[in-house]
Image 1 (tube, helix red, strand yellow):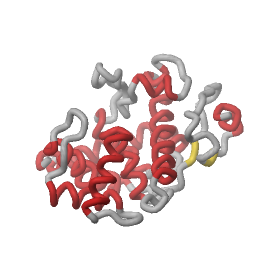
Image 2 (image 1 turned 135 degrees about the vertical axis):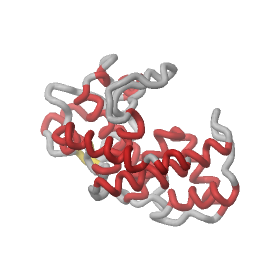
Image 3 (image 1 turned 180 degrees about the vertical axis):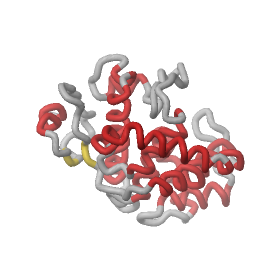
Image 4 (image 1 turned 60 degrees about the horizontal axis):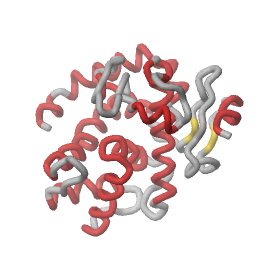
Length: 232
């Protein structure tokens, strides 16, 4: 972790370069996802480059979008391998994730809060089930409060040393929590961009997709008329 913290200035430069190069698409597709935080994620996931990641998940691109994401939204295979599409999918996934969290934990997660977006990031690190375990454990530990769930998870991890989640040992879980709060957040803050309500970002021209049943009709639609057709 200390090496990642020491590398924050250089990673921030990568995030800035990514924002400068792809700003038009980022502005179009980030939805309510804080723009600086979105760029920080790309810099940490791939250095802001279109490259392959974990072959077990078929991860690819700026945001290391997994192969199953295309199936989730009814899109063709390798859709994620085009730069614009990779950014669009990141915006779509994070906005859907943030909205799901506020629906599932209405007493804890404030829709559109920065805390909700950090928890959305946690779902891409730990998965939906893993993030649910973190919220439950920190809640039982007494450290979470409405609007400060991620901070409560961090306090729980520090107090207890965390627990094993999936294939990640407790130490790895604690490290990944700190990566979100101690590395991703400072980089995102350096680039700016406030949190907004989750919305469905406008779809790339000519692209239609389907939303999973659990979220249909439960997340606001962006400004694109095509999107209303695509999400139906």
